[in-house]
Image (cartoon, helix red, strand yellow):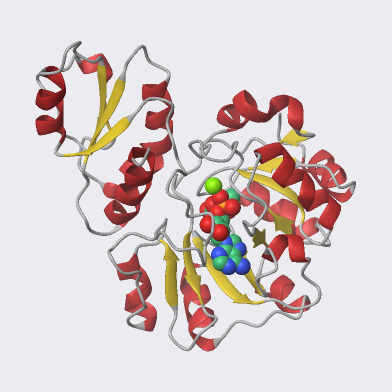
Length: 320
Ligand code: TXA
Ligand code: MG
C-alpha cells in the first residue's frame, strides 16, 4: 500500500492487479486490453462470470484512440460530468476483449475524477478494467484500508488515494438505443443528467434490477448482519417487541432514536446533506456490521437526488 505510481504502472503492465482510488469507490484494476489480466479480477472477486466490467480512461482522446464513439448526448454529458461519477455504455469494437464486455457487444467507459488515478491512467498505454475492489456481494470499499482488509494477500499493490469523496458507485447510462437508458443510480443524480440531455428512460418500478447491467444483482452490497430499511423509528420499536430483543445499530440521514444508545447510531450528515451522506454510507455500513449487534436498521432517505441512489444500495443490502 502506498502512493508509488511507477510501481503501480509496472505491476499493471505486467498483468497484475492493483487497487486504485476513485472518487466513487476503490477499483480492482487490471490492463483492460489483456484478457488474462482481466480474468484475475473475476478470480479474486469471486465474481459471476457473466458480469461485464467498466473500462477507466484518463480522457476522451484515449477512448477515441481505441475507436470507440460517443453519441451526441453522451458527449454533451461528458463535457459537464467527466471526469466524474458517470459511466457510459456504448457499442464495443474488436479492440475490447470479450471478457470485458461479457460478450454483450457493449462496453462501459468512465473517466474517474481522482488526481492520483488520472495521473496513472495518463501514463498507461491501456485503459484499466476495474470493478469495485471488494469480494462480490459485499459492501464497496471507500478507503485503501477497506481494500487491504479484504484483498491484501491477493493483489500486487494498493494505490492509496485517501477516502473516496463521492462514496457511491457511478451512475450508469446506456447509449445503445436512441433514447438514453438509466442502468444504475449513482454519484450523479438523475436530475443533473436530465438538466443536460432531457428525459432518460428509467427502469420500471423505480429501482434498477436489470439483467442488462448484470452487476445489479439484488444481493449486491450485502452486510453480514440483516438490514431492514424503512421508517427507522417504527422498525426499531417493532424489533424491540421481539423475543429475544435484537441489538440494533441504526443508519440515518440525521435522525436520532431515543430507543438506541448513541454509540450505535450512524447519522450520515448532521446538516442533512445527501452528498455528504453518500460519501459516508459504505463506511457506516461496514462499521455497523463490525459491531456486536444482531440487526442494522436503516432509515429511508429522501427520494430525491443522491437519496435515490442511497435508498437503492440500502434496499439491495436489505434483500437477503
Ligand atoms: O464507480 C464505479 O462505477 C466503480 C469504480 C471502481 O469505477 N466501479 C464499479 O464497477 O462499480 P462494478 O463492476 O462494481 O459495477 C459495474 C456495473 C455492473 O453493474 C455491470 O453489470 C455494469 O456496470 N456494466 C459494465 N459493463 C456493462 C455493459 N457493457 N453493459 C451493461 N452494463 C455494464
Ligand atoms: Mg461492485
